[in-house]
Structure formats: C-alpha cells, structure tokens
Length: 165
Image (tube, rainbow, N blue to C red):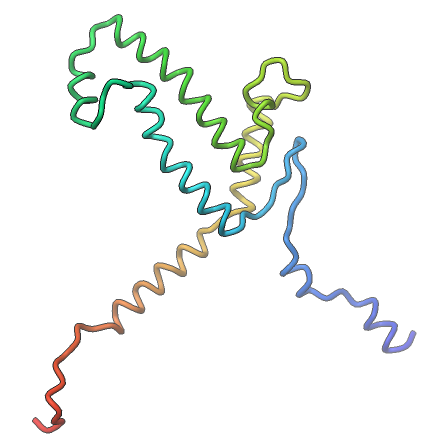
C-alpha cells in the first residue's frame, strides 16, 4: 500500500471534533444547542414563573398582592389553587420542553396522540439532552475570565504627567 493510499484511509480526528454530534432517541433528535437556541430557551424559561403566577393569581399585579392573597386563603381556595397549579405547571413545563427539545407538543400533551412519550422516555431524553449540552466547562471558563479581568483592570489613576516620585 502506498503512502497516499494510507493517508487517504487515515481518519482525520479533527473532523470528529468539529462535526456536530447528534442522534435520535425515542424519535427525538438529541443535539447541541446553537447560541440562538440557548438564548431563546433562557428567555422562555425566564418567563415561566411569571406565566405560572399569572394563571394562579390572575387578579394580582405584583408580589405583594400575591402574598396578601396567599395569606387570606381558606381551605377551599387552597384546594382550588393547588388544582390550578397541578394542571398548569406540568403543561407549561411540557411546552417549554417541547420547544427546547424539538418534540411535537402533541407527544407530550395530547392523550390521543399516535406516538406519545412515556415519563421514562421523556426523562431519558432530558438526561441525554443535558449531557449533550453540558456547558459546565464554558461557565468555568467564564468564571476564570472574570477573575482574570477583575485582577488586571484596576481603578483608573490620574495621569500627572510625571513619572518621578
């Protein structure tokens, strides 16, 4: 075998490193998020508490109103609130997961869907997606950069124009 043939058959490891790794699990593509997808997910996740409180306490405009409302709840009102939260929170969480993971919302929320996901399958997908999108190294590097910049950037000193004493 010639040198050229050996080089042609040799696998280039840099292609594996740079190639996006994705696979399908229970009919869902597990892939790395782009920056735009990650930012969109953070935006949606950030609005989730507001959405849930809006459904649980539609008449309240702020946190103080919610606290006052909670303090005045009787047993019947607590049961009604619990019922609203038990139906709202999982539904909104599933919508968020549907958007993030690219799962057809019907597979999570439609009882008559042809190919619904079980809780175990959904959990396996979430775990696989979290492993594929592990950003701990990124956040560790950001912390390191933050420390480096905080040490190198000092408060500005007045320039007196003279370097002597």
